[in-house]
Length: 243
Image 1 (tube, rainbow, N blue to C red):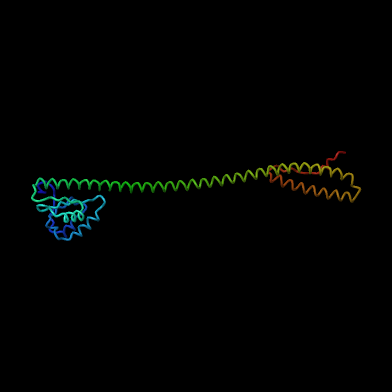
Image 2 (cartoon, rainbow, N blue to C red):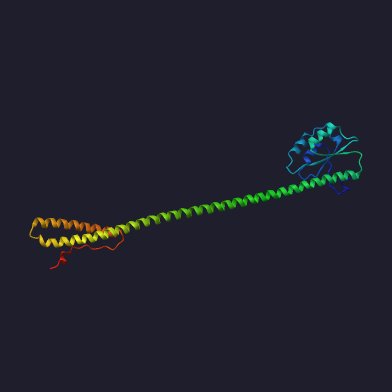
């Protein structure tokens, strides 16, 4: 009957062979009530319990007139899951209709399997893209962190340079003013030397004051150099005293 309905099938001699013949591409299984009566179907039940999430293999059980008792039908439904009972005798059209219904339901399961496989592949692709994007973001974050660190270092260097420049300007200004004072002091000391040349003690004290002012002048030149200002030469005005 299945061949006449263009439904390919194979005959299985016993339940043990059936347990080894069922696979994910099996469309449905037709069993007679007699082959199940008093037989252990634990191996098949275990196989069905481990089906993929998309699978619910249909079983068509051909029963004798009146069908199995309530206890037997409940046991078979619990053990096999997706079960349709077909009472004999039946018209071939009825059997073909039941077989095609089982085939149609199984085909939907195959479609669900295909969609799940596609979703799985998409998930793998998405995970790969997420991993690639995450790595790119991590690299960009590292580059950004390095740039921020370099910018902070440059800003700190600029602040230090500005501080040094301010100190240099302040130092140069102070040194310049001090240099002017020293010029006046040395000039006056040069003038005084004209009037105390006859007094050895006064001349000695004046000489000591002049040396001290000259050391101050040397210090002023160093401060001016630090302040990046032009060095000013401090000279005594004694040589230019008015006659």
